[in-house]
Length: 375
Ligand code: HEM
Ligand code: HEM
Ligand code: SF4
Ligand code: SF4
Image (cartoon, rainbow, N blue to C red; front, side, top):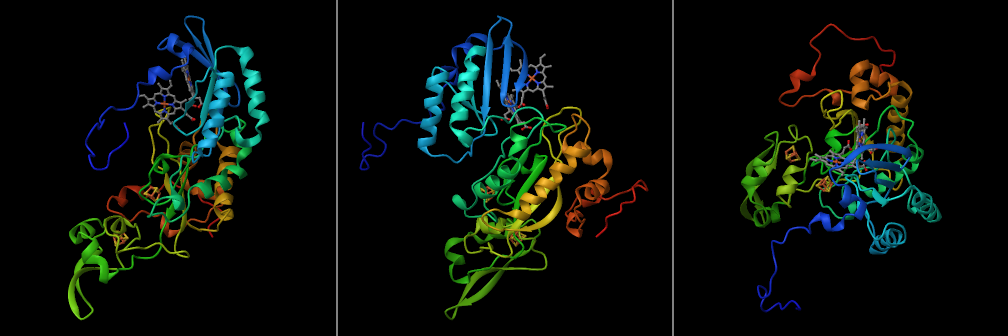
């Protein structure tokens, strides 16, 4: 039935929820659900799972750029039709996985994918670098301090060999968020790329009363920097806010609440790098990532400073960490002062926590190592 705008509630279907995932299982997955015994990574991007029934499923994982066209999705469907009886899945990091039920079917699938060039790069398994979990950036959001798709492409181009190989001490998760709302995984990733502002919001007094719930803007500030105020617009006194610039740390929360308080700025905005987070409980408990580089400029379209910084950290870690050690476990074992030295990153005041529970992050011991690289 066509939608009738004069009777919007007629024939309206709602609250159906997503379709049951079981209807999209490949037959071999359906038949062996809950019966898997073991798995192996045969080569970068190719996994095999063995079931107690004797069945096997081979999975080929490919990188995607997450933001894709319908044409691309159709191409993915064509591959699945040709090799996987029309079945496929996407991973939690937006890779795409094609599954086949016998070993003979793997090579033809790999050949098809290779024939499509780097549109379907096979990899992302084991102790390598997998896809970068990322956000909207300048493609769609109104609060970003940097772009998402652009930075991710530049970083993955430079680190591509790590996607298609498994030569790191453990898997490395890179994530990006374009503002510190941190949509996604930057707060708990091995290496995190985060968009930040460095200038306080501007206040549009002529609009603010019309477009903002002022108490909401005031309550949105983590530092109490926003206060009620009066201003004169066209000779009339109006209610507005003022920002104590000395207190503002440019988080942008007030702009999220109040469209009359924008703060994006081409020179002020850029990228901070955090490292050492993880979500698994393997060996050590999950960790938050920590700030190690406070600012890198938004150098479009290839962000060379950011790409270089990420590469430098990844390579220092790859050269020094022990097998199975995640970036955060490595940094904590050698000590953060050695992390800064080995990655050749200048330590700045900005890495010293000064927010509420900051005290616990300072050093309350005489244990430390001398480092050679204070800049
Ligand atoms: C309560 C159940 C589950 C939870 C909480 C969970 C959680 C997660 C998390 C947090 C990650 C990301 C880990 C990282 O990047 O460090 C992940 C990745 C993954 N999960 Fe799960 N998961 C669950 C169930 C499953 C199941 C049932 C499957 C498959 C049958 C699955 C398959 C995967 C795969 C393949 C990845 C890696 C994706 C990639 O790196 O491309 N997960 N899961
Ligand atoms: C005796 C049985 C198994 C053992 C000892 C085992 C062990 C492991 C270990 C140690 C890892 C690497 C974790 C890390 O690096 O943090 C891993 C990864 C993984 N396992 Fe298993 N596993 C077993 C069975 C299975 C089964 C039955 C499945 C699925 C049905 C499965 C799916 C996966 C997946 C998807 C990954 C991630 C691979 C990647 O993204 O590189 N495993 N497993
Ligand atoms: S991280 Fe911030 S800017 Fe990026 S999509 Fe989320 S809210 Fe928007
Ligand atoms: S940007 Fe953040 S810190 Fe600054 S005034 Fe707005 S809410 Fe407060």
